[in-house]
Image (cartoon, rainbow, N blue to C red; front, top):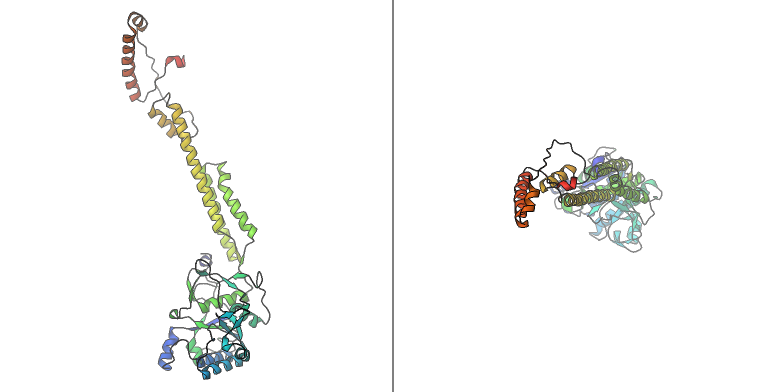
Length: 410
């Protein structure tokens, strides 16, 4: 997302890709019958290297593996072309402990070619995406670092040391790096100056060759373009760096405590809203920091905000529910259910306040009840009272009234 929001930075100025693409297979099938199969005959690769060297390429990085022998004539033609160019870096994924490889058979063949062997692999994150590069794998320097060192003529200072990894600062989505078709270089059909002083990455860009990967930019990208972006990242001094660990921890703590602290002053809904507003500010700040080359943690602070805001809302809801129940139980002893429910609803279940209303207060009594009760049996007196209270209570309560014993207000 951050790469997508930042947008394309334009193609790197120092790196060009020579792609083995669909047009290359079409051209070979039409003009070199029998040659349109991959891997190509090594005499073709030898001609490509020679043409790039004559065109003034500063470094030629070949993202193919030359560890198995083929036709001896073709193999020797490739080795001689690499030696004559004097600036070739060859990738491999077959590396033995100590950085030993089988490129050109290893040993004397590799030494004679004067090529720089390099590991062409990238670490893959648990979600299957490539975000980083390493300085070396099994004591063999990786292709981006080897190319940059050959281009600059000095060792690369890798952030965190040779055992660490670093973020690849992708220039943009797939297709951002300038690409020239393999067949055009093979036949020398490219404008003069195309490769002069450039670092050239030669490799597959045709999807059917299966050298395609999921990237942190959210899109698929060919291995050659991944290498080109990684080389450009090294040449620019690793512009994308993670923020200090303490800053990410502080953000988690600060944003996690935001909603509970705000809830001490504001109601839960407003506190949660303010906390989410803080999260929006973090998103903006983290993107601005990313555009400036610093990766500030966002996922864990965001989770802290969401969890704390949710907890505040849940606790507030529980408190309101308990308060409503308490108020209901308290007032239902004296007030009809309908009135209690209205009071609780109007008060929001929390703080009860006064309400201005027009009301009628009616005082009632039974005329002559004292003399009547003294002259009749208790059972008859109670029957009369119950009959009277039953009729009156039903009429009053059905109208939303309240019954109060005069002794309680006397």
